Length: 297
Image (cartoon, rainbow, N blue to C red; front, side, top):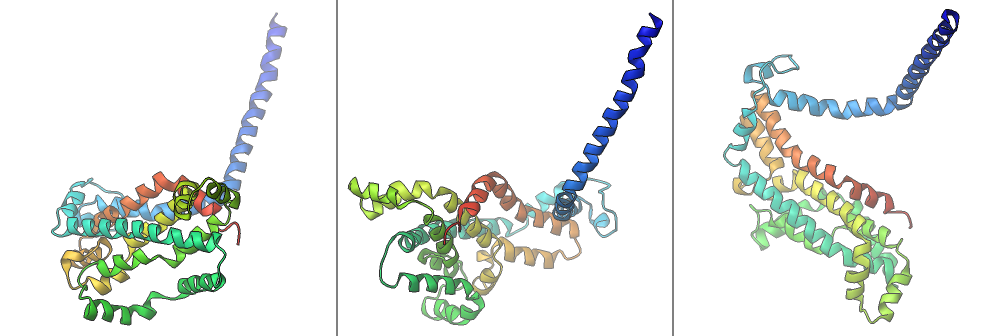
């Protein structure tokens, strides 16, 4: 009995050692395969960690080389939020980004539909004009556009010179939607026309539901652009503090609190948080729209 009972122990010991060695090799192999992804993740996440840790430090510690807060001062966010003008910057940014995104999508979708599905004289020329507009830097037209909004319409000192042009389409949005619409089989539109639908009804009832991934992608692109836009508000609304956006107001806040790095980082985090949360919840639709856009030329 002693000899028989001893045999399994002699066999399981090498087996457990081999299992541990196999797990160790698998772990090392996983690290080797994903090392680039891990390095890239750390490269993007460490700055956010630095901003967050600095935002909850005290005034004195924020000026030192310490990386970990000795005292978690959450009141920094309340101090920034209650800063005079900060809520106004929030309201202006939401108006600019929300209304601008809505107008861009609504005005660009019919143009993209016409370029993708209609056959008319000058269609290729119109597409070339759209692509050319994508290549044109906004700095080229800023002087005549500013003179037009200031001298003719007297709308400087507000965000309307930035919002109103979005009601006439955006070249980048038109191009991306057009590329996605090319992937939709024309049989769907022909079937809708046979059922008595006009072009507008076909666009709203047939094309629009199928274009939701692309619309989500271009809407996020436009929302992020408007939210982060600094050049436009600096040109048109800098003279009126009541029309400042978060991007421009953050620069003013930084100038007023240039030694309070904890408050500056807290303000930066409050500005970044909405777009990060929005992308986190909409990333599936965003990635799907970007993946499916541009498949066919």
